[in-house]
Image (cartoon, rainbow, N blue to C red; front, side):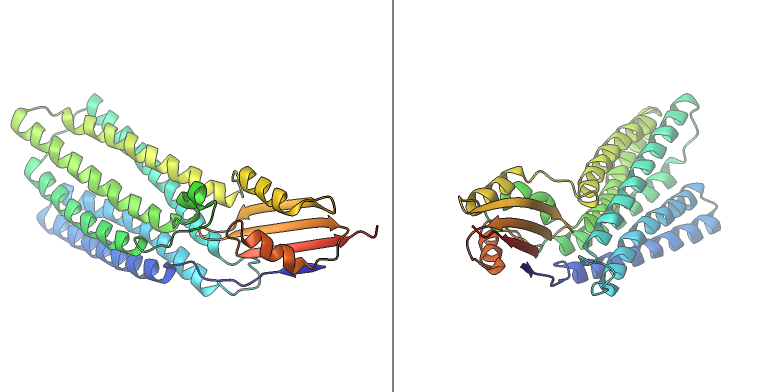
Length: 306
């Protein structure tokens, strides 16, 4: 006998997160075009290079947006057994890799500038950094407004897992991109002012290296979180033990039990039992729902005739 709960629900706030990401992509693209055109007209390499940098930033944000659109369009596609919740996680994972590569590029460029110092057009560079800071602060506020209303689980085991269980990794990746850029702009302005007024030209690449270390730390943290979901990795030992203690008795034993996260917001449970008592799967189905939150539950009861 089996009991299934197969209803596929869209992730909370996903539509709002998609909209705010679209707004940030548009802002980033507009800034990119303005800086590139202004750089070409004025002959400023600082403006031109930052415009190109904004282009790479837009690509990363577009990955976030594409993941939302794909997940929404295929949410009821039967080819995705548990829905498309992991598409957003995959988008976050991809962006984490891009973030890590960006940090590495920052470090390499900074080290190169320590070895081979280059002349800096301070006034133009400071203006570009200020523009980038303003754009990224606005973008960060927009993205944060999308993630601020995500729900929180009230169940018994929500405290130990809520940080990953209710986190939109796709939106977090986009948020980290703009925060990284904002942080880089602040550090760049600080370093440029020191270099301009005190002659410490080494401050700019040193600050770049420090920024690269922070970016790498954020990226690695996001990689660990998203890869755990993608690889069905999670420590649910305490929760599994609680399920066993609630169900097992002299007449009933747990033969197989699997618990895993299928998206940022959903977990699935498979439970196989052997029992000498005549209780339907629905009984155990309702019992495990009192222990934790499971959107997809499969219960199999093998009746043993004493």
